[in-house]
Image 1 (cartoon, one colour):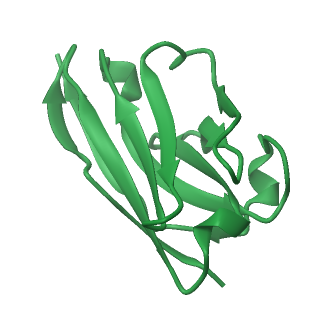
Image 2 (cartoon, rainbow, N blue to C red):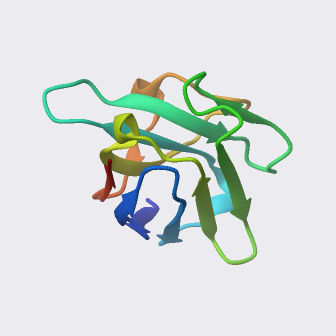
Length: 124
């Protein structure tokens, strides 16, 4: 099974930007649809963005559309999340996840491989 490790989180001011990376090992990331999820304390984990195996299709939750960009480099076994115009509401732990399903998978229950998460904190 593929193992995932996120990096790139940190503290940023309102309106700033961060880029998260997800490194995959133990498997070929091109075999997986990939997603970024986030979770705030006391809240359920929510989908942020997903991307198909080839990268031809992307989906974003409405609150991040036009601010975040998901991308992937299958040759490097990497998935990325570029986050612009960050707001305090974006403060969460961000998780990278992999699914064997085809197409755009938005149901977190269909993701079976998860990273440990990286903290993003947006200060006002």
